[in-house]
Length: 265
Length: 258
Ligand SMILES: Nc1ncnc2c1ncn2[C@@H]1O[C@H](COP(=O)(O)OP(=O)(O)OP(=O)(O)O)[C@@H](O)[C@H]1O
Ligand SMILES: [Mg+2]
Picture 1 (tube, rainbow over the protein chains, first blue to last red):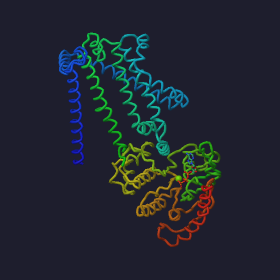
Picture 2: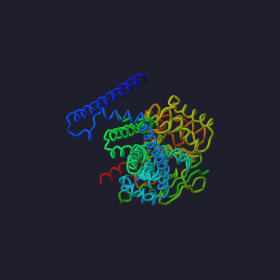
Picture 3: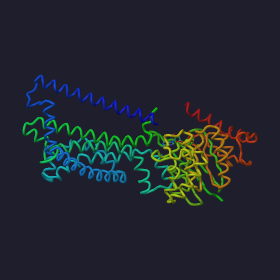
Picture 4: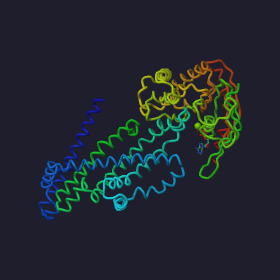
């Protein structure tokens, strides 16, 4: 057991060391391109200049405020998305032909670019919080809906047979068998929906907002401040990575381990 | 008293557009307290028949009467031990065993008392808090048996529950199951490939014909219990069943060669 944790700790350390090496190499190449003067300074600032911008936006509060606003919108919209998506998904299970019909549109709905919702949302709702949230919801709700539907449909029938045979029906069956049996697959849908929401909120903020990460990105562009553009991009990248790795991925790993799904010999 | 009656059960399956006849008029009377063993060549429809009795599968025609009334759905009065085990991977062993009890609203204390008893019987107490992937195939099968017994059903349906067990554990459970049966006077329908198993356990052995299947012969085994695997006197039953089965297996092989 302790041997195992030790090994795991070593592996984590190795992973971190590799990541650090990779980042260092990236900054090195960037610095090199800058020093060679391939692009004018205004188009490509040096790593140091971007770092200075970071310091500036951290100390004047812009960064935290923007991240806070963006994450707030995202979480609110994501909660709506999960609620509606799951409810529609369950309805699709309950009413088979409705489910089948809606599912046949799923490819189009999933592939639909989030940005393409923006003009519609502006005209329907306007340049406001709800307009942005609408774009985020529309960009992720189908992913939740389809994943709910297909996760439940792909439950091995033997689990449901066994449960019914032991007297589980109605809500008890749903709560104690359907949901846990679908969970490993639901988590994958959740991760996908999260990444769709993340795309959508930044896209919508670039076009529709006066605060938020997407907004400081577009302000950077308007003022030809490439340092701010890059600083915003790095922030967006980092948050996306952290949430997926330390929240969603962890959750998925935990569930998979509990289920014994990673025990392939 | 007749506990369960299968009347002219017919079942076809669709295989890529072709209809495959699995059961072709199975008739069976199960008296209260019967220990029925079903033997038959692989693929003849034993599991299908058991599923129909359990109410998990609908027959094309015919009906199952339980205490004289047609069954409608699956229910805890006819608990099944599935051929594949069918344990829930998201639950610990103990929660798997308690699942049916929980569904029927039995309070926690009583549940853990019952589950302890059956885990003990299946020699799984040490693994109560393990997840099912941490068990061997035979251990999983024992959990599945404990889970079914814990529900104390009117009729226990068992689909080759001992197939994955080592011979020592199997011999032990063969005796244990006879004791449980004698003590509780439960009605059991037990499907098996293994002729000696059927001779040891059954008071009636039903030999299924090759597909499309019906019951070819019923052999009554009236012999003292607990019967042991090594009992010489069981040999004559063994050979009687073997003779009935041999021709069916040959028939199936011919069927498949063509
Ligand atoms: N869901 C299904 N769909 C199509 N065909 C099926 C299905 N279930 C069973 N069959 C067919 O019905 C026949 C009987 O199957 P069944 O599982 O009842 O056999 P069995 O007697 O239990 O065999 P075994 O001893 O190998 O477990 C087989 O020919 C099989 O192909
Ligand atoms: Mg079978």
